[in-house]
Image (tube, rainbow, N blue to C red; front, side):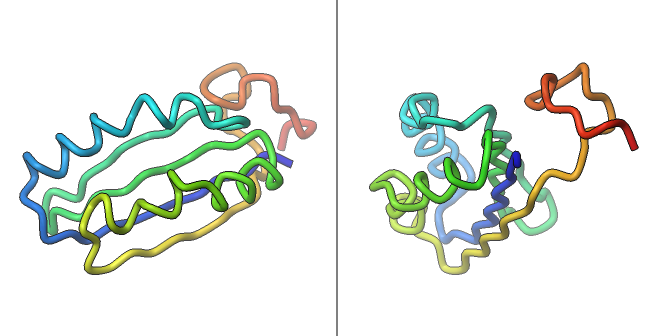
Length: 108
């Protein structure tokens, strides 16, 4: 079953330095086995940043969480608060679009 990892970070870094570090690490995320897509977001009101990761399955997500890349997220971004949430994908709204274009659960 496809899986989503949501990570929200509150950091003491200013926005420019935070973004520099995001861009510096981005190529390494492209090499993560089973990672279909990663979306980066920022809450304008708080400055908090999130990463929304789309994995082919829970096993790929679990394997990623054991990597040096995943383990260093808090230190790389000088996180003062970090929240991780894992979700199973139920179904996509538009199965022909996005990271789960080939994922089909029978159309709900």
